[in-house]
Amino acid sequence: MNDLELYREQLAECDDRIIDALVERNSIIEKIMAYKEEYGIPILQPQQEKKQQRQIKEKLQDNRYEKEIEDVFHCIVRNSKRIQAQKLFSYNIILIGFMGAGKSTVSQYLKDVFAMHVVEMDQLIAEREDMSIPDIFATYGEEYFRNLETNLLIEMQATKNTIVSCGGGAALREQNVKEMKKNGKVVLLTAAPETILNRVKDSDERPLLNGNKNVEFIANMMEQRRQKYETAADVIIHTDNKSVLQICEEMIAKLKEA
Image (tube, rainbow, N blue to C red; front, side):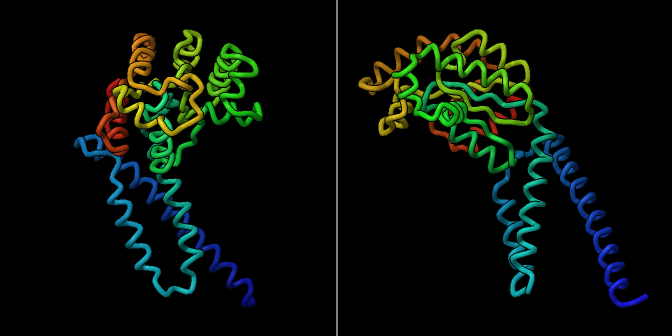
């Protein structure tokens, strides 16, 4: 056997050990999830993740392959997050609620902690139509936009383990709610009108609020929508005075109960 063949055998043996280690690691991830569930320990523990990152950084300090190994660990951690998400959610998470309730903030956080795919409906519709949401309203009218929402919700039924962040009016259509529930759990995020105003006051991407950015108008519109929102929801989360971590922990707990 020449040296090249020997090195290739050593490489194959190394690959076998890596595969075995990854299988064991993924199994441990599932055991941790089961343990947390059994003893009521919060699923999301960002401090623990930061601790692991520090440990890896310290372990690799001055290692000639530091960047390459860090890249591999990034993929390993991302896949671990996906395993957690798949164990928790065998369905899509559909976020509904009034504009400014926190849907985009929550969806981005869940994307980070679970490596889940996120569909921001308004953003995707705007990209496909090649115009802003206000321009779609002005050019084609609200009914046209609502039809685009319905078609996108039907399209989302072919996915799973996806976070779908809906526009504020998406849940007002009965057909939309039916489409949401075919492959998803509907989570209503809500907040006080004063909180909503504070969150949206500097945005020009809210066509229904143009010229009406005040607490009274927002409160009236929220009340008009409240019954339909609550009827559509499998879970309701109030987001006032809560961190995004607190909101997501509450949501996970309620989804497990639902």
